Image (cartoon, rainbow, N blue to C red; front, side, top):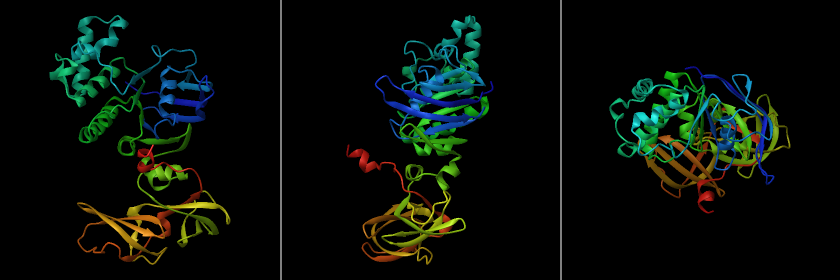
Length: 366
């Protein structure tokens, strides 16, 4: 099986009530790629998946798969298969029958269907479960059955809508590796929808970060994490410190920002000019104790131990800043005591002021 590329050509989705779920979007998912669309609930990522699969027709623009315009082509004849969150396995069918279900409509004999199902169950390491029913399997095993059933019809593109969301953390982590291995073995193009940053960063060749119907950034996991292009992307993917201010000077690829905490320098990838409202972002692991460059004095609020790592949270004039360091037994700062912290300019990025991802506390307060 080989994957096909998927291209959105100025595609948009507007519902009858006038709500535009997906703004005009250009995006190419390359053949054979594990591509994730990452974003908060309601940002439009599942709507894009449904448009690719044919369950929704674009309001504008086109969906192309393998260079062919999918306009008017229903989901049952597109070269795609879609795995839903609830898996939708048939509870009274045996596992091999679930996997082979889509092959009967193709006129395949029962023996041929059984052979095909057994090959796919071997691929997902469930050969010995063929005669059981879904209720006799674990959550992870049922997940693999759903993948085998989707692959049975030999799709060029496999679409996965948050398929691991119902699993516990340990099983989700295991299934990430399983999914990635299956994708590499088959060469099928995977488009994976998730709001879980860990899933996207762990499994994906590339990631699209999405917010309010717009794709904010497309890149590898390293690019998204280390070189965010927007305030939303920086604040949504991973933990990050933010300091608000205004650009006061630019020198080469660096800018200096004036803030309530002082002046700090960082990378200036968006070519901001003096006077521009801006936000400086720096990852907690890039922060240092007793760092002279971009230094400031802050008071320790709390100390969270995570085995090999130590997470220190400081208050700097009511701005909370996190510093993550290796737990070497040498860092002993009493709670409430002031310390000097800082960061190198090369490890900080200065971006245009803009919308931010909502924090867990903000979401919980709804």
